[in-house]
Length: 356
Ligand code: COA
Image 1 (cartoon, rainbow, N blue to C red):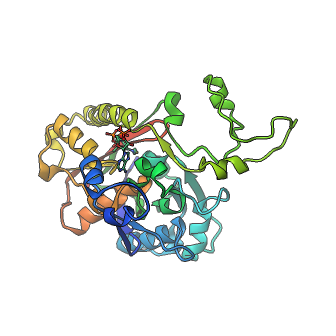
Image 2: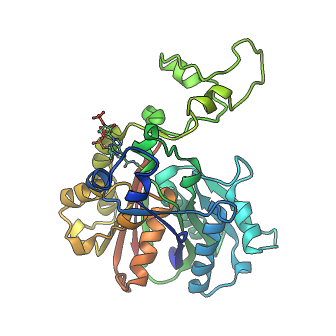
Image 3: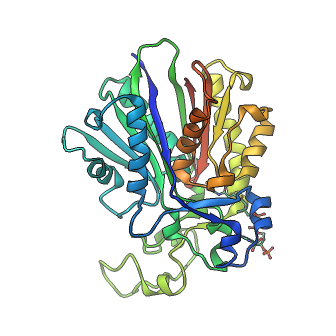
């Protein structure tokens, strides 16, 4: 069975740069607070009416396709990881197919909604499809337009300052080269804390999960209805219940445990150690988390790539953007061992080892 490899990679971020200072015009925050807690200096925001997760993803995909030396029509499967999709349904996978002008229908398209671990889950799925011989050119995209769904008032500041927009894409192909390509992927989940990092409304939950947990939250649903109802209520709109929420401390605490665990799991699986890693690209959630993991794994600065300072947390897009940047900067050489890892909503987390 051949391994699969990343045959082409590209990224795209919107032109609009929004600094921490810019955000102070909307909410009570400061450049100092944001930099100290997250490392973020600025992020990019998509242009309303012109850019969506699909269009950003398509620009990244075009670069990946070109670098892989294939044409759009060679793509036989699309995996699109995003939690800021253009529509509730259909998914961005088919919108991407249309945006790229792929007219053949002998192709599948799948959306992944795993938040920060979305790219690694997508990589694992692509890897299995390619290894099994089912597909030969899988386009995997991670793209987000968070700026359309953030609370820019002081109420939302703990979340809004962290996130940015952007996209990264890769082409996954089989490789006959012994020991090269995707060596392993490790995936995990724990639904216990599902609501601790979540975008709850609008949704079709009618408060069910909160009632099960003994929290009777009034979402503004009409209590008398027998069936049907609304997934968006006036109360949700009036009281700002339509934004992401996060228990930052719990996310931080859990992330710094799970990152090293899942990285060591992948290394052990391959009989490798942290010293063998040429480049570690952590999901860019927070510079403090990445630095904590780096210290825990005793990695040198030159073994780690961080770019959250310039883009913020672009969720499913952080890893392909960072990997693409690293490749463009000449930081990734033939035969290098690349380690990627992510942790996020769900909670879900994962890692992958790639021999370039
Ligand atoms: N600007 C200024 N003050 C802010 C703020 C902002 N943007 N956001 C929150 N604060 C305030 C809070 O209101 C609080 O004030 P109080 O003490 O008067 O109540 C104070 O800062 C501390 O808030 P807290 O939430 O306890 O801060 P923290 O030290 O936990 O840092 C995070 C917050 C979000 C930076 C941190 O928890 C974190 O990085 N968590 C992980 C987040 C993450 O990675 N998410 C993505 C996962 S994929």
